[in-house]
Image (tube, rainbow, N blue to C red; front, side, top):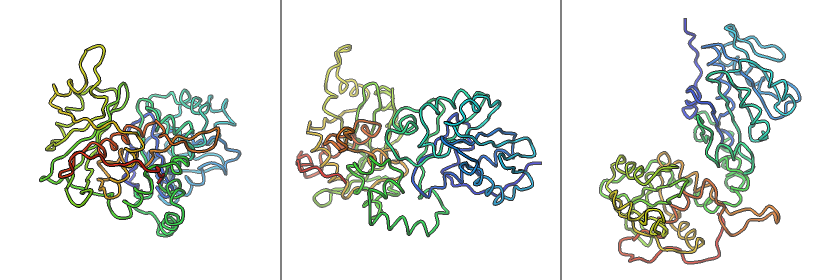
Length: 423
């Protein structure tokens, strides 16, 4: 007989019940990561026998583990008759087992575990690369999974680099979650968050929005996006049938290509910019992106590309702009401006832009985390942008700002050079 458990879990965590080798959920405070992980594992443990290693980088005693959290969830879910808790482990009537260990202090012990089906690494931000390399071969049972939950802190953290900055390993589910994804976000935390946002926006971006410290402190667009959120400009933005959809591209060579989809309503000096969609992929040719545009089914206007699209490739003798034309994509080339001018143009657009939060989610993450390069030796930010996973989405947005021919504006690119501000 199937056990019926009333255990609500936020929709953002539904992927925990799907098969993935790595399940990585990160973000700011109040998103419900730990509680959702605990509930999901306990539910799965009632449905079939599991052997779960609950790990942290350092665990000096059982008090440092998530055992107390699991015990509390057992009580909340009314599973006291199914799970039996001892001083060091949690056992289910069907043979499910939860054990607890520190990765750094018990490497040989962890290597000896047999038949593990799940490994949950809590506070994975602190885990070393050596420990990550230890866990993977330990989880060798067919269908075994590695779950990681963390609040980002350092841009250099191995887990951030492995799953967010770089292409994650095959079979990875990587999700950024936060307080907006938690339908039970308590009012006490909301008041604390709003106070933090008003008093210290950089700390708010780090603590509540889940940006690493250096990203929050060196962000080009963070405060403008926070203001847009406050003003309700990050939400649901329907595609207006009476307006053309324009696209702006950053074309990667051997890496990611990013495309912003936007509509523009002439009004005032800047007009109204509505960013309705975003797409990014890696390792694909122009034909793939032409198919993506066709599937979207929008009524298209301008397609804006960076200046280097006109460069001829040595192998074929054709430029990518010619290759795109053969696929039905007629690109307009954005002017070649200094990056600083382009960033200032993007800032002007962000002053009044609207974004569809769901369809533009990945693009918004790129803009929010786009930051100046940090000089480790001098402990300060350089004037140049950091080239990382955010660059393609941010560059494509910049090309929209400088390359779109606004109605009645001729072709005067936005963005006169100023002392570039970080916000």
